[in-house]
Image 1: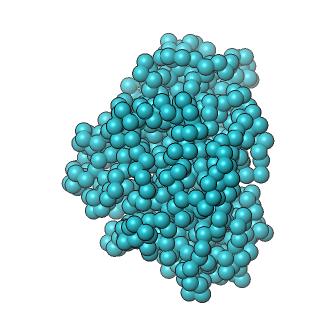
Image 2 (image 1 turned 135 degrees about the horizontal axis):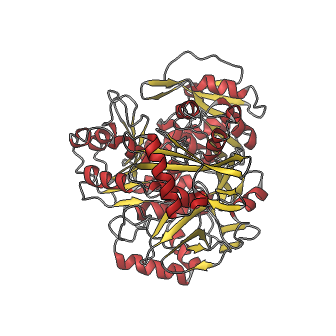
Image 3 (image 1 turned 90 degrees about the vertical axis):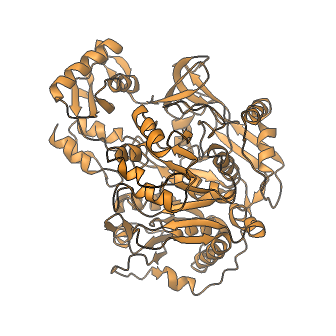
Length: 628
């Protein structure tokens, strides 16, 4: 396929101008580079008030033909997936495009033989093995809607997602390796399925070989594959047919099933992947995320495969068998583009730099950051020790809801600026709003919003379009509202400043928590903070700040200094009533702070925390409770 990337600053500027002048023609030119059964008859219809968004209307395609079949003509023997197992002593697997196509078609026929058809929802609860990527693509091949649930989630979380989408088949494994631990996935799935009446079959991959109990709906993956061949023509899909549902945390505690469609999602993930990472033919690209997250969907599976890339899948964790594992894998597979989360970088920078330096990282060309804004200290460590001041860092801003990266630099093409996501992608119209919803220009700070749809925007929340409207389109009519604030410098670069939909009313004053956190974080001893409200007899609500120090500190001395700093920066009304020094904050595995849980902890509602097993670090909750 044609190279979708802008390789020079001038071609980038031309694209930006074209996208601004005629967005529909701009996206049509990109979409023409893919294989369609039937061309679209209209590029875009949308109304942000309803809200309804439709891209490439009338277009017919199957995303797997673009990720697999068309590469068989030009590069059948090229490695599509490098699988790096959890145990470094186990051999890595190199799966060619030809082999991947065969395995996807066979898995698709396995699903069909067990009753799956176009439009059915299939839940996937699997470890990070090649079969997870194969399962995702097999669903897409037959037009079934996949719903991947991260394999660290609890039975309660799994059941809630299965039931919300009324999935008919569950794909899981006997267990999963994760560092020194084995996760008993089949046992967890069995517990979930006691309350999931829609599931008819449970197909189980044998990964760990551990004993599992067997039920009348259970089938072994390998035995089911033996019953079918690898000839599976792709189901022809409408551009707007759902491709997948992916659940993201809701502020109410009820997860939101974001729905992404076939055509626009394909176009945008491929376009953004090749541009942001400046992927070139022959490169080896590694995103360390799990396919259970949107990062894994868009930038391990669909985006890289759509452009014929080689993508690394890693089963393990960065700390096993030691904290040099990431760098060992980069050296082993001569990785060119490396994409990880600031949470991982901060964890790794605490360990001896010799763990980095002993590995040959000279193959690296591009570094990436995803999941949350990267702090300056982590950015500079990453730049110095991993990139050797020789690799551009793309600090990418996007969400499950956006489907792909919206604000970022393009590696080596556009200027980078530490802690800034920098510029919107060509074709993305990002603006800043004041509290009344008016666009504000120039160097300023405000509410981030997008004023025109891009192809990979989520189309709805599964089964609840009204919630979709209320969450993303009602606060600022005519705009997509992601819930984040941002500041913009004189060159137009954006820096994401945190959530703006976290507002606490204290003594009748509306206090946004993001500016208070920014003030706390300005203290030299503070790495990160989170501010939430809790009920107060006099004020109605008061503020509780959770603060992570970067070194050993006297908690009393630090809290006194922080109160003075907040009063000076924002005003006495914003001083937190409580400041609690902690070693960590409860976060999702994508790095998002779970403020809902912090609010319960601050209020002392320990019995109302709900399911915390989906957190990256559930153990931190006990520490916060003990020190309250």
